[in-house]
Amino acid sequence: GPDPAAERAAAHTSHGLLTDRLRILDDHRKYQLDREVVDAPLFVTGEPRSGTTLLHALLSVDPDARALRFWEVMHPSPPPGLAADDDPRRAQADDEWREINARLPQWLRSHPYNDMLGNGLPEDERTWAFDFRVLTPTAWWRVPMGMVVSALPPDPKAQYRIHKMMLQAIQHGRPEQYWVLKGFHATRFADFFATYPDAKVLYIHRDPVQSIASRIRMTADLTEGLTGSVDLAEQSRIHTALGRAGFHAVMDNPMMDDPRIFHLRYPEFMADRVGTIRNFYRFAGRELSAAAADAMQHYLASNRGDRHGKFIYSTDLIDGDVEALYEEFAPYRARFGLDIERR
Image (cartoon, rainbow, N blue to C red):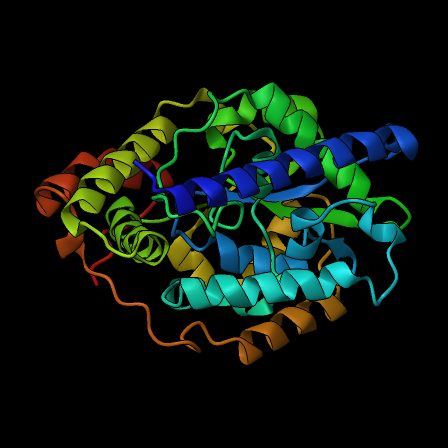
């Protein structure tokens, strides 16, 4: 039931995404980007609100690594590696992020990394906006619509094709570095590893009850900013159900035992952030350099998680009996060595 103004905003967003998609495909032919080799990328994954973004941010400051940047994926053509330092897309993405942050001010509390503006770190799902498979907030922030969007049916093969095309375009014309990326890949591991057979994955696990409660609060804040109002009970029902389904899918996924996946416990990461990354690098056949470790420590010292205010959530937000949910996820905690996390 959108009003005419909302319809115009949605049409404008769709037109922009389709136009950029055509430009991406044209660049791929024009610059023969299929020749670009994406070699042994590193990926961070896990369920939402489990520490994946901080992990990715720390990996991104390694001088030997390359991460996606919002200005590159929001305006990907021509290939960003061919751009000059004063390329107007950088300033354009900064302005757009200022608009997003003004529209969604509470997002900075749950996701303070958005203050990096156009130089911020998108999730892999943002590349799929050009396939209309996943419409992330940064793809449609001017459209007053909720956080749960029924886009096209999933097509992992198509999604990873366009994801790899984006990586090839963005690394084109740049010095050799290895990719460090973040996305929610677990339900698509078969096609993921078919596309990136030499990838290594850092999978972080957290007490599902805390993850779900945090997710409800964050998505309610975003929905309110996008639509102007929020039904908290409805958000609780939606995201409790989605969270439960996500964690059960992990338990039922035979590829969770793939030897290319490094499993990490959230409490272990929070106790020694750089040390756990060093262990992951060793698993991936890489060495964490002194320069990288120093850069990660500097990032932690300079980017407090509560710099835009403390993000507060409670398990009271969860739809249903919280104690029953703890019991439901006892097998998950046992499998990945987690204790109940009380906050």
